[in-house]
Image: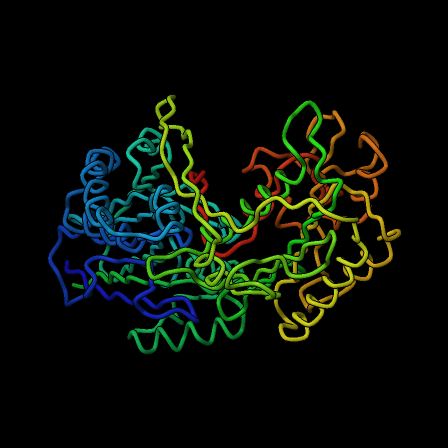
Length: 242
Length: 277
């Protein structure tokens, strides 16, 4: 069993690519891999400073295998928070950035580990994992309905003092994996569209493109039709091959 | 659905603040040495500070909002001083870069472990207290209607303008009911202008936030400002519990001797974590 990874990320319409606060890892996708495999997406909150950097730290830590479960996340957080603070420390900032930086940065994390025909996932926030099997949506995690997406999820903070609140917010799930299955990881706007389409009896996975260029064109159409919220969008596709 | 237009740099929202600078603002709040004029300046500076900080990003300030401040007292007109003097609606980035001065303040902040830490912060001051002349609220609302009317013509599909009137509720140039109604009637395709009132009063009553009826308001000035105020939008009401507020469907954009920053937090310019306070 081998896994092919594809990953695409497109910034919010009206923003520059460098303003994309989503992260995914491994970022380059790449060819088929042998399990054990770790993949993650993280979505930095727009209303915080240096949240894209925080999202990259979180996704990178999961993809490196450093964070395997809720306990691992809690153990890794202080080190990641220290790295974020090192990144922002010593910058000479205007009054408004200084004020905003006191709030810290926030991001979601969705990570999935694939090992010997099984997957296990952890999530904080509203980035979602979908499992496809035999042309059907067989699992949806951690949210299962499009109506469950709100504008104010609990997110991972760069503030150490928030860590005590993290554990009850970590969701976990696991399942088996067969040849022909697909796992899709998405940040919230895309995941919300995906679930809404599925609720209408459609097969939204069939519409998801296979290149960054096509993904960008596809999002442009959904945004023009106002069927998706204008937000950074990231898609990771893990296809199980023979 | 109304009041759901995206607020972004390509489709910014407009917020116009009207500040009562009349002689009656020289009076103190009930049971306090503090003058109402100080309260107006403080509410205005805190509103602007909050809006600028919300728009701050690594690269600077994003222009999600265009803001204006009209003063009314001896004169009615734009109240910015310094480089912004005479300007009507100004992109928030320009406001963030042009406070009149930065004041060093000490603030207590929860440390997350049940304690408080004291920290020094730089607080921007755009407005100093002014108390001089009559209270031409009708004139101020007329000027506001002109400014936001022009804005809506330029942004016909944008989030409807928000007008925040900060006063002690004692107009000297007549009954503002008709002009306030006209102002609220200016519409983009996303809804009518939202008129919010902050009532700073000498009356010894407890602060009130977003009431849904006149009953229980302390005096005729409060009842007048309540009547002028728009109902809160569904988005504002649904976000209120996060601020510890539980509001009815009829709640209006009116506060009595209280802050209004909580309302501005509800303007959605992106994901706001529930654990950000």
